[in-house]
Image 1 (cartoon, rainbow, N blue to C red):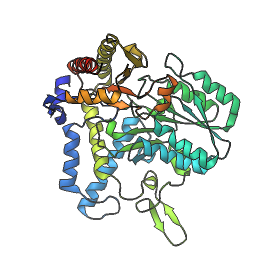
Image 2 (tube, rainbow, N blue to C red; image 1 turned 90 degrees about the horizontal axis):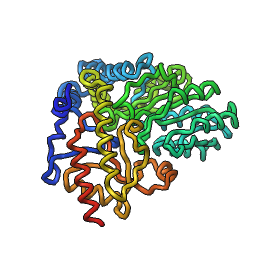
Image 3 (cartoon, rainbow, N blue to C red; image 1 turned 180 degrees about the vertical axis):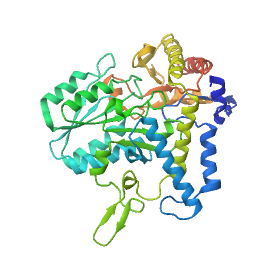
Image 4 (cartoon, helix red, strand yellow; image 1 turned 45 degrees about the horizontal axis):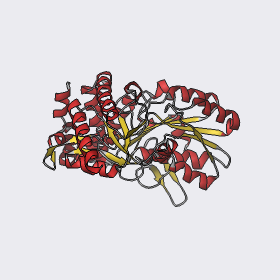
Length: 410
């Protein structure tokens, strides 16, 4: 499917904002939804709306089949062994918290070490900070070098210092600010040799790269469905079957039990024992529809070429405007998905507001990644981010609007 055909699949892209054609460059926050996903959610509510599991009427059986099928689609999409390794959550943040509240609470003790990186999203920092206060664990950090790449030697140093006290490495695949992609396969290999478990945050990479949990060998992997053209309120935790079998649930309630008496309960099999209560059924079905849409229509290698062109245009255009500082690599071959920047004497919020008047949607702030901003001496930044439906004309419109914005505020 060509670019114009892809764009036709996204109804919102025909919208006007402030009398201007919408230019949506905030895809790192959430992607837009193709008509196939919108229709799948609507069809569920129109035809099959019911609760899942243990229902013996037609609607419940249809809902259960569709919801289970969505798990199967995610398992195939990530190359997991089966649905017993796929837990649906509200987002990647909840998936990381699930790991922290099960592996962290049940298996870690005071003095154990969790290793993070300086470029993590807050969703992969704050849960471990809370756990550190509660359990007395230690958080160690892999630094980011001046060329914006992770310093892998930091990981080796930490493993050499703490030995088998290092229990988990939790690392982002693609930074939502720097745009760099880490060599997670290599990092996982280093951690595994030391006996540490591994978690990969694929929130920013799931819509642009093929994910293969078996090739990487990670123990856990998370992503948000709404960044894969699926509905908001959907996320995924992949976990090796061995982990989910030995871990106790994080949340208790209905749906996740086989039997309950006054003294105890018997858990359902995975993944259901980690999905307490009525789940986001329509959202899960919508996520399954998003994966179907991607599988039918998208060639990741072709998308990568188009995205590189967009990033190249953005980086070259920004470099020609005085007073702009780019956070991250200025070589388009080293960037994926996002470009964050600051403008001397112009606040990012003012930039975002001015561009919105031209119908251009970008993000401004720390992007839930404050430590990496401070590592490189940046305050908040403006950020543009791309998806497979963005065009060169949209990037040029952004650059033109930004130039007029800077002239106005200076």
